[in-house]
Length: 102
Image (cartoon, rainbow, N blue to C red; front, side, top):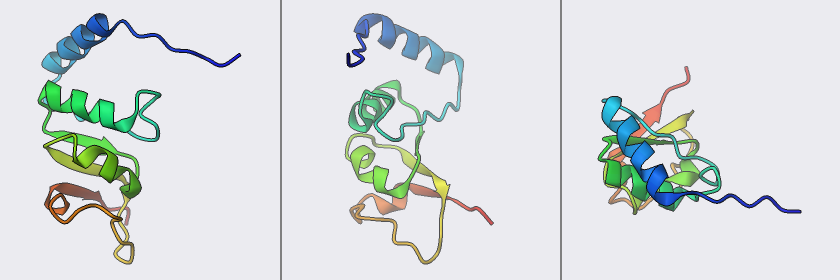
C-alpha cells in the first residue's frame, strides 16, 4: 500500500511562521523532491516567509526554485570550476551562492 501524507495546511503555515519568526537568519533547505511537497511549493513558502536565502542540494535543482523564490540561492554541493551551473537562466545566476569544498 502506498504511503499518503495529509497535512493540515493552516496548522503547518502557523508552525512555519512561528518558527521562522523565532529564528532570524534562518536558511531553509529544499532538496530532492522537497520532502514530498515539491521544490516549487517549498520555494513559494520560503518567499512567503520572507527569508533572505534558500539552500538547495545540487545545481540541477536551481531551476525548480529560482522562478518561485526571489532571494539568494545557496547550493550545498561544492562548486567545481569545470562544472556548468546547469540550465539556470542568466537572469538568476547573480543570486547563486556557491559552496567551496577545497
